Length: 544
Image 1 (cartoon, helix red, strand yellow):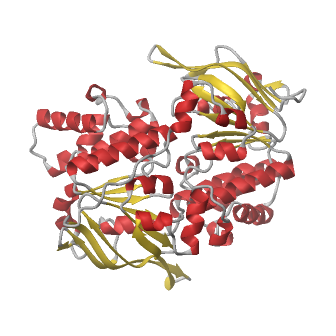
Image 2: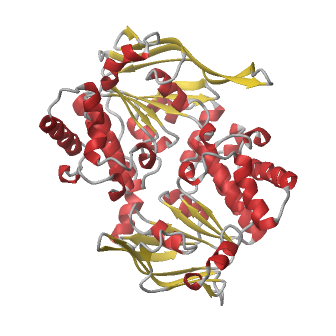
């Protein structure tokens, strides 16, 4: 417990129940912990452990009345949050307590520019006028590590990368200098170098403002760097707690030991020198025009991919690493012919860069994609069966229902999901299970080439290791070629045969995985590896 007489936040014997269709789900059971002024306490555990539910309870953001608190208290500065009026809650939300949510795309309003969304917080809580709010928004975005903040404030959320959107959320949460910051997976979507900068920024703000932090994360490395105390949660209860050094050096509970040992393991299989080439690209360019003026004349170009070449063979994985905005995802979309590009792109020896949409359609079954965000990539209105069978219906419209059903069941078995659950909906599954559903959707068509766009970045460490092993097994059994896009270099090292390092649309280094990780040639690659593996190098050297 705290040595301070009055903790800033004191959660006592808190339970949370969810009510649906006459059933009760006990999401959190008798959780107690406190946070002192200026202190960081971390909640650690796998998806569904109750971490986020506990944090959302602290500001009463759960979907009431479906959610209820059968017992417990949440004391903030000595006042019970559970008994506050809506007016009192509005005063502390965003002012006394700030919050960084895990999913920035769903947390930001897609209809409003960044300037309006950040400025609204400043106007509401600090009474700033338009000019003052704009200037302060630029300062906050710059502080959060966004380049050209004066231009970015005019962007809509969909015009920003995942990392940039998360940084906007961080800027909003810190706008009013809160006493307590609840950070729910605050660096999930960020590159390792930016992650290091954001964590350093949060530490500086804590020192300057005396701000406390409730840190929710599945990244144990972040916990070790940031927190003084840690609570390990499982199935809605705290199974172990204590000072960070004590927990990391001498964990007592078997579940804590399991988390400590969970990390993507192994190395990719040795490449087959006679394996056929699946995907080949030469001098690929994707330039987006920058238009200004009344007549919208093109005055410049954003060179998202600028003259890139690659070769990927059957049964092998090409890792593409780099920071947000480096062009990784744009490259993958160009190879799949989902966006326009220049340069040669060949699939199984056949040029596809000049094919039209209708001509590409028969090849779609062989070229699949698994997206970063299983929450956003799965329709909440469709059952798991409908999600997985969608491609089958498009590619094989005459396939009988029973056969489709059997194919869906087989795909679910391949990704280690119970086929009996195929009539459930995505919200009834954990994050890791949702990503397995997304993988099953890609695998059901029997592809040869799969683009994996950050497929493990939003998952807990133990689930990451499971997904990596699943992808490895699927690749081995089906001889799949993977384009693996990630900012998590630990996962890349476990999966990729070859690696391309991108920055600002260009390749700064490429080679075998062993060469890149053992003997990186460029300063930029060395900085990425140092940040990912906690080596002695300054992430600031990347110039981000």
